[in-house]
Length: 552
Image (cartoon, rainbow, N blue to C red; front, side):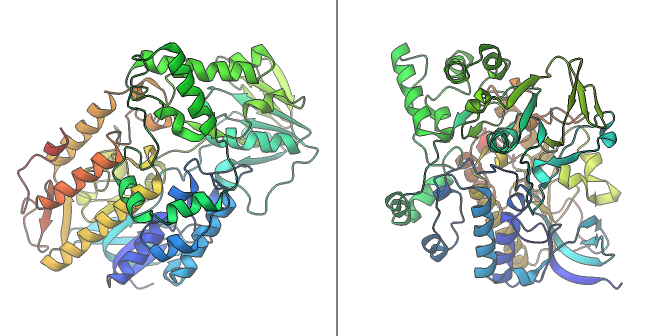
């Protein structure tokens, strides 16, 4: 098949890809866009497991680029469920006529940079070859499902499912004996729903997780209108907050108030619901003693909720600070363990031994199941990128470049990979933020950069090694000023055997990160090489300024 040329190839049709397509099309770029799935939605297309729900309030988890879209769309719940979010993604695709620009059921298998032409040579699993000036990975941060390599896994004769790749037709568990392996966010959301349907549910927990009640409720017209009347100001405020969410931060230390005052504030935030609990005081994620007070409050809530004391203690996380693993937001999760048809099996010290044709063996006990649900998470932030054979200068693969951990400048580009952009990549706030806010900021930054290159007659954009080194160091310095590295979390790659342990997202905050990006552009794209043509030296147009001077 002959090679086809275009300005930009976009990989992925989730919320990042949809907005990219809309912006770049409006700016006159020629685009090819590929999506593995059969429709739009990204994370919300694949994650259809029972109970799947967003942990960001609905009024804040949406696009801000179109005032008409903001005003016309109505959410039905405070925290939206997967079907409604997918409906929203489809509405956006239809409203802005985006489907005609997307090639579904297509995988990009390789992307190689050609230094003789300064183009990316891209190939799909359909055998098509495309030459593009720019390649943008909108592949998502948690889009590659992780299934542990249990001995005997292929021997199990029952049905198996992963929460991150749920059958689109749904699954009927009525009367079934089922196992859920994993008690992270997806497990915590799915378990209460599965327990209502199954004859019996056994949960295999390796690591207990802190979980906060969503206190979900129907969306009130008054609350929705309060946002619609003030969207412009509220969106601007969102963009410069720490997490991309507007929530009231109590600017007090947990250690500077009385024990009664702490308990009162924790209870108030608990009743409010969602992640607002972590904003009860200003030092919960930087001071161990302050964090201990919040963690113990949550453990006490578990102890008063779960009737069996032994089960309650197994569910109460004690080995890491609250908030340093992805905080879970639930609907009646701990209450579920009071049901007669639910059993918790803790495998933290005695892992699952093997699978059998009829179930599995763990803790010297043989279990029999009709179906097994793997709620075992994802190879986050890097896994999907590594599924593609990405090669930069001199044939350097991205996997090789990142073999000791991901290395980026701003989480948007990596040295030796010119004109390759990542949306919400490692080294950006990404998974520590309201993803919709971070997505829009990254897409706007990337598209504005492409417009700048076009206007200035430039062909190549690439970070310098110095800028990348300084940014990687800055990301890690900031992370280690907090309690986050004390948890063996997927933020650190700890859920993937053999994956380097490095804190991947940028914890400095959405607002601080945005200001850094703005200052870098204002300073002539400090830390980037901007080359006018293929014959220009690789050192041309390199800024000598410190890449992260404004961040320090």
